[in-house]
Amino acid sequence: METVKTAWDFLQNEILGMHWLNRLVGDLLNLLGIDPTDRWGASIHFFIYDTIKIMVLLGVLIFIISYIQSYFPPERTKRILGRFHGLSANILAALLGTVTPFCSCSSIPLFIGFTSAGLPLGVTFSFLISSPMVDLGSLVLLMSIFGWKVAVIYVGLGLVIAVAGGTLIDHLHLENYVEDYIRKGRSLTASQETMTASKRLRYAWDQVISTARKVFPYVLAGVAIGALIHNWIPEDLIVQTLGTGNPLGVVFAVIAGIPMYADIFGTIPIAEALLAKGAQLGVVLSFMMGVTTLSLPSIIMLRKAVKPRLLSIFIMICTLGIILVGYFFNAIQFLIV
Image (cartoon, rainbow, N blue to C red; front, side):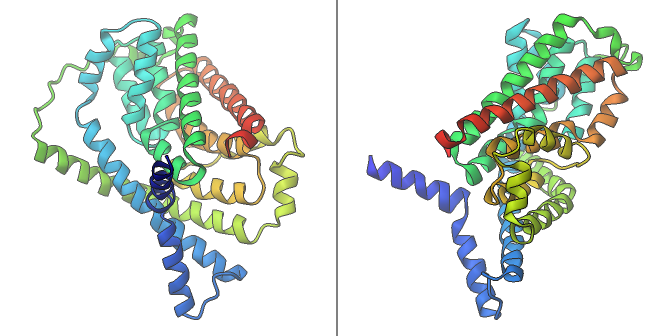
């Protein structure tokens, strides 16, 4: 049993957490005459370490997920989902959302394609909610920062929100609130080319390069904000605003996340810094969910596909679900961290 624990700790700390990189960056800064323990040195250390760690994990995860995704083009996904009905279809759509791109803006074109193809609206919304909120990348990256318990519960609750939200939208019969050009669009009938293993590997590598180019500026911005929070904003201010003393911290975190646009990789360093400064776990995770699911750019894009009433219901479902997740994590924080 001790051997298993040692192996797991090594995976958690040295592989996922990349603590070896943390030590290496500190040693290199010392060689350059920079003290990694003072405020400026710690900021530089945080920026270099988190940027490299996130981009390495991003590359590995995107490669794996994109390879898996190569087996699920939109038309094949439609055929799979079309075999299921009711709650089982919503569950499957939410699970399939975990192997799609990392941000909500990337998921909306797939949502439009599925809806045009005639899939039930509730099923497509289960996919749309889960895709940015609980992809496989978030599971692994959250494990590297917060541990496996937090990661598994986070993903599980995200899937619950996706399934419940899609089921509710299905029962409300809101099909008429999808824009006409989508409802009357053509079905996805194009056949998928049979890809060889080498083509799938090439596709996965191309996705790594393409996604890395898109998200790198947001990663840099997120790490810079994280370094600022970690080393320059007084801990008392964070605790007062987002700690246990403020029962509305979760609500503030969700609202604060809406104007931002980032994926899980851009929000992780900010979340890590907030937690280290004393913010409640539920506040941090609800902030991450708010940014990845309810960002203003994605809402604007979604408005092009659905009418205001359906958009408002989508926002309310996601907001309420995220707030409940935040308070749930606050309640169990000391049991799982």
